Length: 350
DNA sequence: CAAGCGTGGTC
DNA sequence: TGACCAAGCTT
Image 1 (cartoon, rainbow, N blue to C red):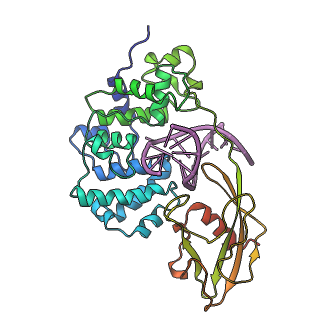
Image 2 (cartoon, rainbow, N blue to C red):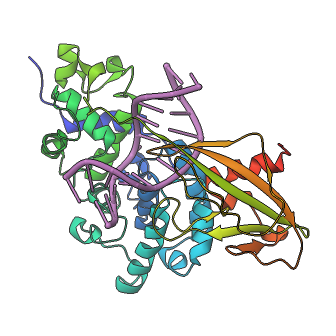
C-alpha cells in the first residue's frame, strides 16, 4: 500500500540536506527568525530561469555587490546592466530585470509586493517566479512549478501524458501537496529534491524521502518520466561578422536592436544570419577572412560565423556602429557568440 | 499559443 | 560530438 506523499517528510529531508546558496536563508536560520531579502530572492529567481545554479552564482554575486538594493539597480545605466549580464544568456531577462527594478522603485516605494497576483504584473515575472518570490521571500503558501516539480510530480503520480500537455495536471498535483507550514522551505525542498535526488537521468530513488509514496518507483517507470513531446531538429544558419580594429586599438562595435536575438547587447557588425548571407562590411577596408569559423548553438539553430578582420585608419567613418576605445573594450561585455569571434581574432587565427 | 529566446555541462 | 538538459517568460 502506497502512502500519500507527506510534505513534512520532505521538509525533514530539506532540514538535513538543503544546499547552501548565496541567496538562500538555510532552514536553521529561517527557524531562528532570519528573513530573506525579497530583492535577492527575486534576483536569484530571474537568473535561475532556465539556468543552472552553478552558472548563476558568480553573476548573482556581481549584481548584488554592484547594486545592493532594488533602488540602486533602478538607477543603473541600461548599458551597464546589459554588460554585466553578458554571458548569462536569455538577454530579455536583463532588460526586464531593469524594467522591473524601476517599477518597484517608482511605483512600490522600493519594496517588492508580497502577493502572487501583484508580482505577476511585474516585467519578467511569470507564474513560476511570482510563486517563488511570494513563497520563498514572504512565506506565502503558493505552489512553484518548474522543471523539477514537473518531474517529481510526474513520477510521484506515474503520469505518462507528455509535457507540455501534462502541465495542468502536474500543477494540480503540486498544489494539492503544498503545505501551509513553511511553504517557502517546502518550495525550495521540492526543487532541491528534483535537482539532487529525482534527477532526469539515474534518479537516486534509494535516497528519496518520498520513495514509499512514489507510483513510478512502485511501477519501475521513474527513469522514463516525465514524457516529453519530441523536439525539432535545429537548422544550421550562416553569417559574416566584421571585426574592424582602428590603428589606435579601438574596436568597431554596434548595439543590437532592443528586441530579438541578443537584443540590446553589444556585437560585431555583420550580415543577416541565414542560408547564404551577403556581404555587409560596416566600413571600407581590406578585409581578410579567417580560415576558421566561429561556431555557436542557440536555442533553435546552429550558427557558423565567417570572421573577417581589417585594420583601418583613424579618420575613416563607419556606416554603422561606433568605435570603442581600447581602454573601454572588455570582451566579457559581449555575449558568448561575439566573444568566440573575438577570440579567434585575438588568438591570431588566420 | 507555438515559437523565439543563450549558455555551459553532461553523457 | 551532438543531443539533451536547466529554479520560464513574452509575444
